[in-house]
Length: 447
Image (cartoon, rainbow, N blue to C red; front, side, top):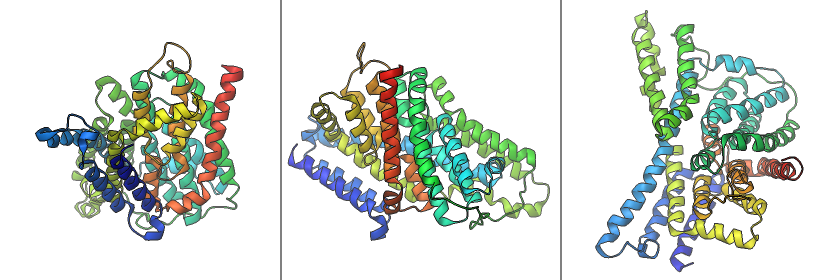
């Protein structure tokens, strides 16, 4: 590893350290992430030919710009997906679309609510994606739970359940989609063999968290969520719900048919929903009701949490710099040598790393580093690939910044890194290890 590579890694680690202690420094994590992006790529430009041999002489600016633009394009697909999903869920929620889900989950018992949230999040995440599911569940929680401490526990469980639910489904997480598209896992294989381990990685943390909840709930009275008369009819509200949630469910279907990136289908759903709601609000019967038209998409777009979006931009682009330097590939090769090809240890360590470093480039690096074998652990639906899907997904629950679901919940509920690390990380780790052990038992005695 060259001194320049070491400098880039050190800059990245320092940035992540300050992100982790945001609650102490009171400096927004998005600002640190943007600085991390600029510093890592600026260091990279000192001698790009050391990482990109073709970046020499007059070709250097063009080559580096092309690399950065490719990474930015990949990052932008995540950002547009996030913005579209957040807007769709907010629109459905503001128009009463999730009221029936809230009523279905409503209970006075704190523990009953915890289990209902756990299983609904788990299975919704397998159908939608963990990011969208997390946003939906937080919106519902805000209507059901008023006590700050309780809602933080429930929100933390949403992160764990969303990541666990996405790990056993080929469309439940970005990493499983990547592995599925490459053909190293199949839908029947990953569902049949990873369902029980993924479920166990949720049930154990949920049980531990349930022990800290006692008594009954009070009705939530969140700011800006007081009961307001809805200008739309019941049929119009149901239409918005069906278009919004139904559209989100159809995202992977649209992708499989058109082979376009997922953000395109999200924008399609947003475009249709935007058009329909504009028509609804433009034809209100009573003109005085038009003063309540702040639920339209144009105004909701202005309320998007841009700090979360910029945080994603900074972190993903900084990780892209690490990937370009080859650090991630070296890390994977080092793991392979250090653990003598033990797939459980290798993927287990990758899962722990995925709680620190974004799991998408980690999985991408593994796919580029290892080839599919005709048989054995590296075959299609082999131990390595299935464990990679599980570990990269569930491992992200160990730190709140370790997954897209965690980052979004962190932004929506203002949960600090330190609080999550102290109260939730060890619980998520127990569930993570229990799932790996369950998978090992399956392979040893059942499958």
